Image 1: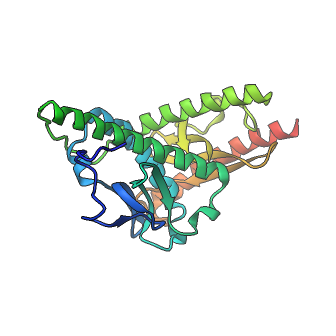
Image 2 (image 1 turned 30 degrees about the horizontal axis):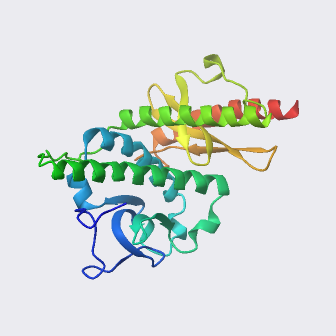
Length: 275
């Protein structure tokens, strides 16, 4: 993929780079680093300097959802780098998890994580290809600042779009396999939910995701429908507290409202499986 005059290529004799698995790297793309209870996304500095705004916008929701997934497994990582993505000296892209971490993932969740990791690599590859062509033509490039904090509302909207796209893919596959279109969950009406609560599509590597928000208290949490076997679905509910402490009044109120949401959704879930 990368010729010898590629500005991102690292000569083996100059720098001996290796990924988590110990394989020799020609181009470092990114890594996800543990930092306390959070995760930092570390990007190749040269690629970051050459980033294009439209590619940056496509990449942000993918990085966000990968961080969410990896955060659930941070306590099992044996290294500070919990996942990295690189081009090897063979020209192949390789994404790797911290040693032994992969065995703790459900198969579908890991596959979706790796798919999005590959999409991030494809976007970074596009940056490199475009910038290399511009340099050959002598075209100047205006650096795009990407260290600004992402807009939460924009990220939420982009994740909703990713969730809708993933649902469409799943429905087409279910049709091809002769399965039920909406396995395990009947469609909720606005009146079914507690007052001032709204639901929207989310995006989660575990499965189909629904995000619930309250007009006053903001995001309450999410419910994820996880495939478990050929004919089984599990429902997992995650309460969202944000910066609130568990003992705070707001946190307790959010928990109370979200529990009502979970009860409502669970009733519909059980109703479908009793038919």
